[in-house]
Structure formats: structure tokens, C-alpha cells
Length: 257
Ligand code: URA
Image (cartoon, rainbow, N blue to C red; front, side, top):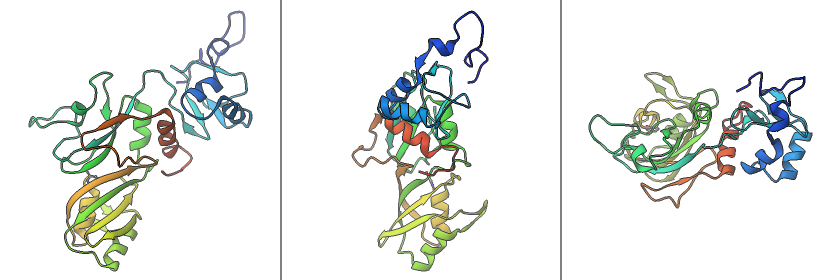
């Protein structure tokens, strides 16, 4: 957050900018690149702190300052954690379920407290992020950032090329026509579909709309992230580099993962 303090000031007492951590060190620690690479990024004017282009020698308070590279947020705050979970079917994407069903939150460590980023239907399996990083979660779920998510849908019957084209170009749902999607048939009843909208039960409704209801749905990718080695119910902490690539995919520059 930009504050008068974090922007520093003139006068007798040393400003926080002079006291914080070197920007290139902070960037390197969270996986942007080596310190040398980070120095080059700063020198090239590609790094901003609280919205202002940073110069070499800039120091920051990672707990308060907002750091962006090429307009994409770089999560630098200490204590942030993001998990990648392979959600099994039957587990609900809420913090607590009124029907006593297991929740995604109960599958990851209780501390620090995290919350799911977006949601998967109870019957849907696959990749789900949980984090305590509110900024990252906001960017990932906000429609204007549009991170692409990929699903494997086992469907009834075999969609024709024309039906697949409808999925690709947009199908009429009760809440409007869907945006263009990437769609391919990987086996007679198996459709790979990548969308960047996040409407409720969207993939299921799209498949029903072309006459091939979903039998099983698995999310296999979120932006740059995939992990076929993660067993159902398994989770892992994202590396700083993965968090950074995710934040970049959700960046304000219109890039899509
Ligand atoms: N689309 C769906 O239909 N269900 C999900 O859980 C996610 C996307």
C-alpha cells in the first residue's frame, strides 16, 4: 500500500526507503531472477514501487510496499502462502459446509489460515489454489484479468466437429453467450476445454448446451500451473517462481496464462 511513510521524505530523519531491503534482493528472493537480472529490470525501468518507477538503490518494506514488474504484481509480503490442491470429488469449496461434507480448507494446513481462490463444484476434481494473499486472489478471480483455466470433460456421446466449434466460438447460456474458448477432442468422449471466464458451473452448462452433458470434470491447469503428479487430495506449496508466474498471468497488462 502506498503510504506517505513508504514513499519516504526529505528532512532530517532517514526515510524508510533508506532503511528497507534492497529492491533487487527482495525481487530475487521471490523468484523473479538472479540479483543481477533484477538489477537489470530495475535499471530498465520495468519495476515500480507503489506505482512509481524504481531506480537502482531503491529500498522497500516488503510488508507494506506494492512491487510490480511490467505492471504485474510481485507478491513480496512475508508470511504469504499459496497452496496448489488436487481437489477430490465430493469435497466442497467453502471454509465450512452446512451439510458436514469435507471442505478444501480441511485438506491443507490449518495455519496460516487460507481461503480458496474461486471455486470448483463439489463433483469437480482437480487443481484449486488456496492462499492468504488477498491481492493475488483478487487478481486471479477478477474477470478483467481473465486467467485461463483448462479442464478435461468426460461427456456423454461424442461431440461432432460442429458442436465443438460451437463450444469454441460461444454457446448461448441463460446468463449470456460464452466467450471464445480453446477446445479439442482428445478421445471420443473426452473434451479438453480452456476458458477464461469463471461463471457458475460454466463448463458443465456449455457441454449440456451442445447436447453432451458432463459425466466427469477435472481441472488440469490454472494459467501457467499444471501438476499431473499431484494425487487426489494432495497439495503442495507453490514456489516463489510459480507464484510470480501466476501473478504475471493475472497481471494488469492484459497477459493471459
Ligand atoms: N465449470 C464447471 O462446470 N464446474 C466447475 O467446477 C468449474 C468450471
